[in-house]
Length: 62
Image (cartoon, rainbow, N blue to C red; front, side):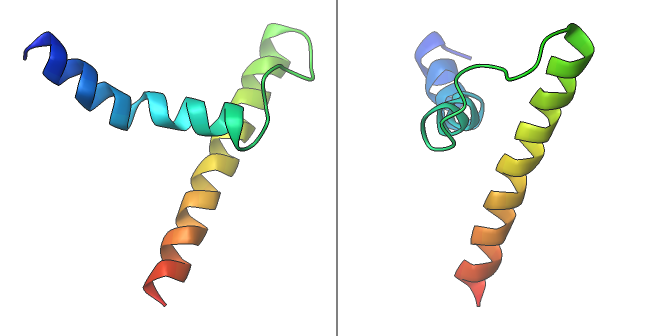
């Protein structure tokens, strides 16, 4: 895959969630300390991002 194609695809699939979490959810730093706690916090942030997307998809289809 060419570099430009790869970058374009990556920006739509990988970078978007991180940008959304940082900008729209306003989460730019961890509230906890320690590896286990920050890993848990990261997972919770990911779950909240996915639930928000699912909720919007359901409402869009109704």
